[in-house]
Image (cartoon, rainbow, N blue to C red; front, side, top):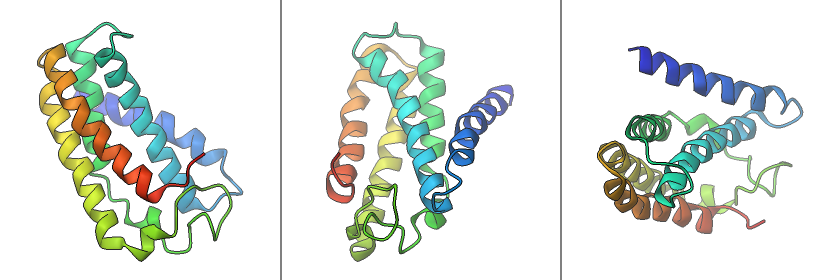
Length: 152
């Protein structure tokens, strides 16, 4: 339970400033960008270990993977409100195709949950297991971003 409380406090500490700084932004866009920042934060730990930029630490890897999994399970439906695409509001790279292909978009979300769960099971085992799970996680993230996010 203390780990869960620490994880929740970390999520709040990271997400709330992003929401507070986005006063002029649509709250749905601000919320999902904060969620993506939290994904990136945890993926940075896992990717850093996979690429040997960060020393492998089973507890830290497990915590990052568990956080990532729980974030992927968050109820995000409100964050993806119709009319919050890059053609309708400022400050987002979300393409209108999300709402044109809702079923496919939801399949991409489901693939992220599956990949995050695999990472959660692998990350704390050993470095090789973490590295093995990174491919599926990268593919899940990349497939959605390639299809539904405007390039920079």
